[in-house]
Amino acid sequence: MELKKVNVLLSSYNGELYIREQLNSLIGQEYGNYKIHIRDDGSTDSTVSIIEEFMERYPGKICLYKGENLGFRKSFQWLMRYCTDADYFAFCDQDDVWYPCKIKRAVECLDKKDKCIPLIYLCDFYWCDVHMNHLRKNEGYKKRHSLEKYITFGDRNAFGFTEVFNKKTLEGIKDKKSFKYCGHDEIAYLYCLCNGSVVWDNQVCVDYRRHGDNASKQELVGGTKFTHFLWRLDRFLIHPDRKGMYKRFAVFYKCFKNDIGEWENKVFRLYLGRRGRIRKALLRKRYRDTLVDEISIRILFLLGRV
Image 1 (cartoon, rainbow, N blue to C red):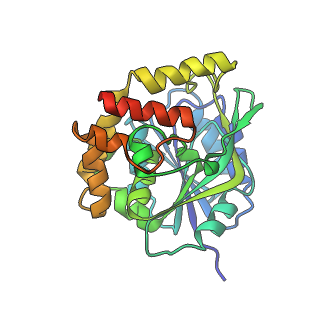
Image 2 (cartoon, rainbow, N blue to C red):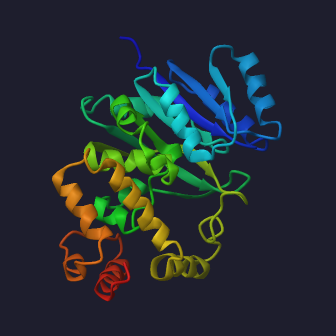
Image 3 (cartoon, rainbow, N blue to C red):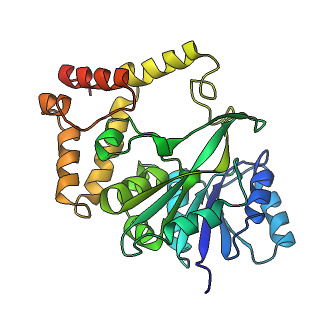
């Protein structure tokens, strides 16, 4: 039986420090039927030269599209619009390392599901420092996942580099205006969460590099328990980007409200609105993974803070 085709979608930008290692890991995939599509988003360093070097070494395996700087959101949308000749599609960052089993594992898991609905697969991964030393496993598959949790910024495990999705998902999202404000990985995940199925895998398939250009305030997920606690306190109670977060969800909802079900519409209207504090606080479904967080979010609902 012929293997399903997979298109790896990578948006590069000034990635000369790490993209060679990533490309080596992509070329080393155990799966037999895939192609790497790279849109360079106006790099000014040697990124394009490195990609062209790999194209010469592995003819027919990599397609390069050179363009002006659009920003990563629109750059990924461009790839989804013009690289559609596949059964499955995988988002890829320029500075991580994929394990040889990454594509093969995703296809095996997705092939077991209903092809007629939007599907998305998410593998597990290691958080790593700039030198790719392992810090911890993410273990997102162990967490609770729901639309209510995601909208209240409690489910931040949908990382683009872990995502592989089917053509039904691609066709549903590729032309939406939400890419002006929402990330490609968030759109794909939310679309499948609302309108299809999400597959969480316990298999580690990626080493996720954290460095000066992408690391958050918690410094590679916390040097100490105390600094990590302060970071969580800031994100959970103060959350300087709370308005921006809800704006992203509002943009997504505006673009997709006619594509999702009645129940999902009700959830978006409730959590994006100002009313319903008691209703949200007394919801029987769990919002968070720990009891302390669960109690805290319900108090914040009662106070009208979220």
